[in-house]
Image 1 (cartoon, helix red, strand yellow):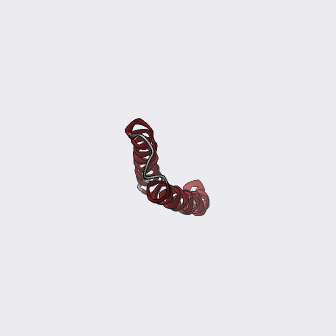
Image 2: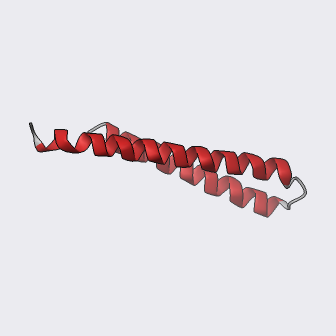
Image 3: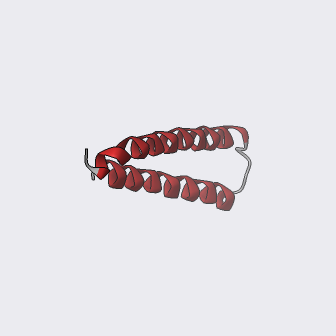
Length: 68
């Protein structure tokens, strides 16, 4: 077996854990927008930017790890 084959399972587990944590962030973002409708636009924008950044990070991390 080559050395890369030994690490692919670990990478897959990492991507799965990252996907679960992204799902938690999605749920928290959803709950925030439903529960705190009266918050000001700058705070709502900050939440959206942080979530969008996390989404881009998850996409690029998955692509890099799984496309090796």
